[in-house]
Image (cartoon, rainbow, N blue to C red; front, top):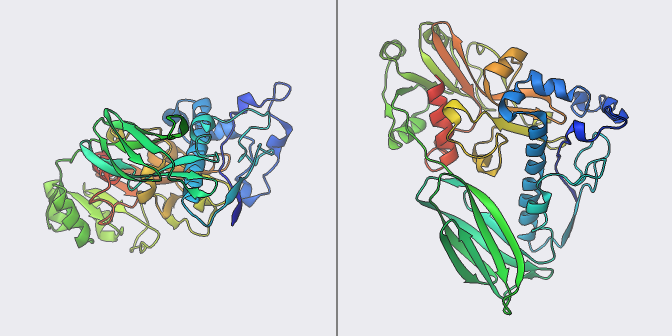
Length: 410
């Protein structure tokens, strides 16, 4: 079986694809496609208006991050295909960008996109050593199970051995490979490297991947979980002070209210000074009142699903989220908590000043929030669609770190 078409978007830096010292003519095309999400014109203004300059520094840095995100996505997808014996080959779409369709390995001006040399090249070979972790994040001092395998054009190969290293730890295992325990000792993005060594000592293939090592803190706050007993139990196990309180008592004692549905009673509590966290999702009931701002909408069957023009997601890794390593763009370590819903219809000023995580489509269109916090009445309300629940929080370091940052926001 051949996978005949797959790919990912990597936006070019508009300043590097100028024609006669101005944006190319095709920047005025694409506006008729899918509500204009692939229309390049105005990219610079949207980047600034949506507050992305504060997060990425500059449009040039954003373009590099998006192109590296494309390379990481290709690395993951090709690895997945090599691990499937029924797949004999694949075709990447496409070799170069074609106007606004920027899923090429090269730009329209034939510039190689950032990150492909280190991330795509090692896995886009006849003979590869694949790497697939069971988890993409962990706390310091913990181990991550990582499957290492050798493949040639005929499938798994038992020729030679695999040599691996992460930090000061290293080891070897005979081809075709197996599972190693990769220790994460240093906080940050930790590089795991692997070499496939032949019987003659020559290097056949190399590969590497990054794992997130996060020093998760536990906010010393009293919590009151309104409508999710399973979550309350998990939070107690994680060391949080969870109490069963009436709303009035929670407000009086300064407890943070945690709820999955926004109701009139919770609105009243926030107006009276409560700190409130709403964990919304695609299956969230509307409650009996609208959110203070915005509306929660499911991603399924919408362009926000990102199955045509790529959806780029980011987190402002500053302030309460500064402990989360890596670039602002959300990579594989966030896969377990990626939302099935978005917070749409926020005013432009709120997207740039009150949203801490967001998602946009194509050429930076249709921005939505994934996490925002704002004052409301005498209180504070934070809403997120990240999957922070009794399934992800017990063991996922990224989920735990995002949760801790969310509590510190209110």
